[in-house]
View: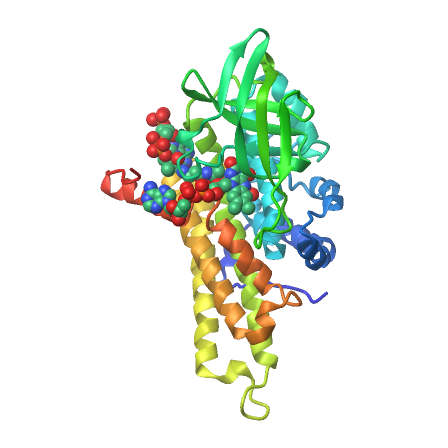
Amino acid sequence: MASYESLNYMEEDSLFTEDELMVRKTVRDFVTAEVMPTLQEANRKEEFPMHLIPRFAEMGLLGSTIQGYDCPGLGHIAYGLLMQELERADSGIRSFCSVQGALVMYPIFAYGSEEQKKKYLPKLAKGELIGCFGLTEPDAGSNPGGMLTRAEKVKGGFKLNGNKMWITNGCISDIAVVWAKLDGEVRGFIVEKGTKGFSTSTMKGKFSLRVSVTSELHMQDCVVPEENMLPHGAGLRAPLGCLTQARYGIAWGVVGAANACYHTALNYAKDRVIFEKSKPLAAYQLAQAKLVKMAQEITKGQLLAIQMGRLKEAGRIQPHHVSLGKMNNCRMALDVARDARDMLGANGIIDEYPVIRHMNNLETVNTYEGTEDIHRLVVGQQITGIPAFR
Ligand code: TGC
Ligand code: FAD
């Protein structure tokens, strides 16, 4: 496997510490050696490479920034860099790790009881338990406050009724963090696999994120014990707080997917002879313009991610900062992937090259965790003071 160096046009690597660069190198080598060789087949078969889960755990990729409970306790920049390496391979691989860390372990860490943290976090960090996050419903995606799933207090616990859709890792999960309205207020519940009245079904036929498992969750008079409600974090701000964690990782991760597409296009353009004998595509002005645009936008996206990381490490990051980063970097990566696909000509549509897989994946990444429109409206609200969602 050829060695890989990410774009470092403005010497942005000089903004990282030795430790951060070491984390990146370790994950980069792991991804190159163990993850990338599995992807063509996994994508064709629409299968998640389950055998990698223990390796993700050993590499500290599950709940990486959580302190204690057998979690790695990494800094936020190091975390961003490892998300980038995972998404260089495939957005579905990054999704697996970001759902486990930011959407399952984070809510238990931030809103859970001490008993819940001790019970679940070490096993989730070791990959002995897999989790999913159930917020979206068939009729409530961008507007999660419109959810229909309900919780009702019953003797010894809570009875859940409702359906969740588009849930990453749903069918392979041991626990689901499900959001439901209890007396009109959104609350989080831990639903364990095997609970009576809880079932999952796989959503097949995706042309995007095929390496990731996407599922529906069904709760029909599903009673969870009282101690399975997350005691802290009431209201829509609780799940939205988790999304802020996951969106941060995505803003970093997609720079990795863009890098993969850029490097593929650059190498291809240097080799592919067009029209004149011995004159490669890279020697033509139109091709150079596309490559320059990619390098320019990836560099800006990386600098934006680094600044988000600095704000997060200083405890000053706000949801609207994350919205700007997620919106900008997903759109950037999607545009880079589309240009790279174009430069490969017919070879751009075949899975011998990773570009079409990344391009299709990035359509999902631009949609989930808040669509591009929603993040534009979040930033619009912040700069004008006027919400325009409704
Ligand atoms: P709104 O009235 O604005 O807010 C309700 C309360 O929440 C607070 N808040 C936030 N808190 C933390 N982080 C954020 N990002 C927050 N955004 C808002 C807000 O301050 C308020 O607090 P309080 O105390 O005053 O009640 O709510 P709204 O109903 O108007 O909706 C706003 C909107 C549209 C921005 C929001 O609902 C939204 O973000 N919609 C997009 C939904 C979304 O992103 N869903 C993602 C589902 S999970 C997923 O896609 C996983 S993919 C994983 C993978 O595979 O990687
Ligand atoms: P809609 O909300 O119906 O949006 C449709 C269109 O309307 C979009 O273009 C949108 O931008 C636009 N729109 C929406 N609101 C406005 C507005 N106010 N003004 C103007 N335009 C607007 N969810 C989970 O809970 N957990 C998961 O693990 C998860 N994983 C996912 C995995 C995959 C592969 C996919 C595709 C989705 C996943 N999701 C998950 C769901 C995802 O978060 C939602 O699909 C997303 O939030 C958008 O919701 P929607 O699909 O209902 O689109």
